[in-house]
Length: 213
Image (cartoon, rainbow, N blue to C red):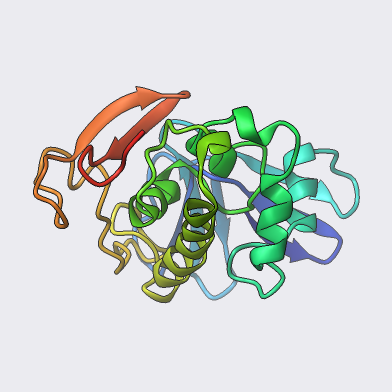
């Protein structure tokens, strides 16, 4: 989530909202859910293709569980997101029965980690998205923690994934291993074809050679 505060009013952009900056005299998009024009002639537009959350509210006057959790919990980019904290997440009573995808990308357990980000995290950890957390070995749990931290940081350092665009319409510099850009191509590690299937309300990408169930 991206939060912009103007005096006592908060603009909140959730996952799925595409933000674009427009210079002075640049043509604005015809279709948008929000258009903010600044006094210098520049503008900021927001549009949603399939789904997305866009809110405007007075500070302290917004009751949303996911928003509250995202503000309370540390992201993988912070020092507070350490091995001990990750172990506490794994020890939650509902977690052993969850798949790796459900654990990582649902219920705002890890703010900022959604379906698009988890694909390469699980590839780097060598874990299939459908594998139950309760079946992970201690070595796999440690590998998953390390993959979350390092993959998240690399994506951030490189300006996001190449499947998304930044404020200026440029694709991110992080080249995804598993995504819509690579499905059907050979895995760079083992050569098996990268597959795509529908799972838990979205798509998962995986390499059957590198990621065992």
